[in-house]
Image 1 (cartoon, rainbow, N blue to C red):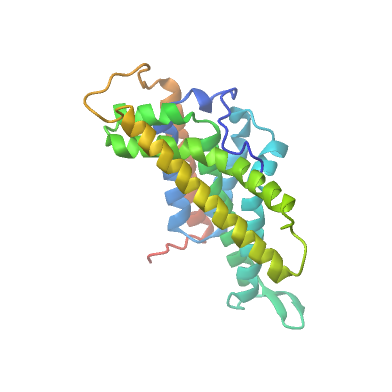
Image 2 (cartoon, rainbow, N blue to C red):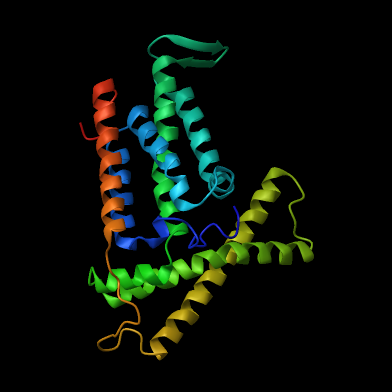
Length: 265
């Protein structure tokens, strides 16, 4: 994944100008609808709508792919595994030895794959179009969230972007010591776990230093003043209505197509 995956696209066209809370509201609506049903129609409608919104972000399809390719790979693997292991009912579409795909198993695989992407993209859009400070201001001023939660969210968003660069640095350091990616799959997996553990240690140390520094500077002590006021505009109304519209259309389309499969039903 690119190291700038979580860098806000503040040069975008519309979404970067919206209040973080309106984007969070729209993303939550869309995510909840997709999670309520395991069917490919509602997930497909949501995913198509999200892709059609790319011009509002100022992100090309190529750049989006380079940022979201881990989610794409995970969705493809999940869809294939589900279609392979799902109940084999309906018309047979493909059969080769133990590999058998039927109409219902393929629909189940599509539902899982599209659902995974439809859930991942709103979060990615939110992160790439939102400045962490703006989100913290909105949480504190508009939602009156506790200062510890707000400062933790702000620190977390600031630090997550550094983890990718830290991962590269750890990899180069291990390679310089002769610990690379050579060897059999078991050795490579062991090297990966070692590097992941090193990243976790670095993250804990960095978070500890940041927490101590913020405490020493009086964050959260007494009433606060704000350099920038978190406000709402007509753009925020449009963003919220857009999220509501996408969620409603997805549900209606799935119900009309007869594929709506409520997970609690």
